[in-house]
Amino acid sequence: MKKNEHNISLSSTLSNGLKAGLKTTWSLGKIIFPITLLITILQFTPILPWLVELVTPLMHIFGLRGEAAVPIVLGNTLNLYAGIAGIISLELTVKEVFIIALMISFAHNLFIETAVALKVGVKLWLVLVVRLGLAAAAGILLNLFWTGGSEIAQYGLTPQAEAVPEGVWQILMLGIEKAAFGVLQLALIVIPLMLFVQFVKDRNYLERFSKGLAPFTKLIGVKPNTSMTLVAGLLIGLAYGAGVMIQAVQEDGVSKRDITIAFIFLMACHAVIEDTLLFLPLGIPIWPLFLIRLVTAIMLTVTVSVLWKQPKAKEESVVDY
Image 1: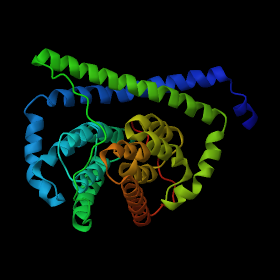
Image 2: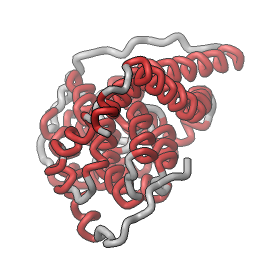
Image 3: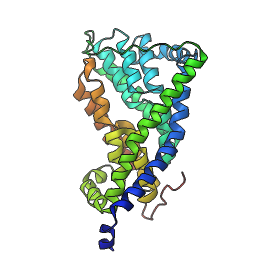
């Protein structure tokens, strides 16, 4: 049997990988396109300023001034790039920048990444509680226990000015352009990634890969067949790693318990290296930002895993998509 598996032709691997990539791009594109279009349009309506105004009174809980609501709302509704652009537009202390950076690291791009989590089978309430709860707790604790960082942050970059669209038609076209680019970017990442995953599966490398990650999956209390989900999320994030995650759940028999625990881990520190490096030019301590997310993810996941015991009977895997 193994011999036949090793003899799977390269053309068959490429064909199956391309089909999986296109299918995943279509599936996720149906989520990313309308959400990106909607959020882009909302930026030019009274809704986003209303959200900022709504959140402003809460900022003092995190030791932040009212206008800090701008990068937090932008980061939560859009992505880290939007949040960083919001930070740079304000004169903030190092402590304030660090608090905002940590909060939006835990809870950013909520609309798209929550939709991805739901697609894999994770409950909506769990996504919101974990991501928003970690962001709020991190902001409060950092404000209470860090006494440094009172100097004004020195930014090492300036945001590129964008032409403000005029009129409904220009706003709509900008939204369509950004949404289409988002789907194109997704395809350029997902299709090669799915080709690689198919190659790994057809050559039986996945089993060796899973064994190599066995100590880590054992630490957080899940089975080795979650390894592809964890690596995809850690390296390239929830949105772009979703294709691998969905395929892993469908084909590798990942249980509901294990995919939920894996996502709890990833919601705390997905794309942890790339996300952390984005804040490097803002003049804040990078290593603490990285370690806080990673250690929090491990502690939270281990705790949930211990409380949620592995059932003796075989669980049903998540099959509804």
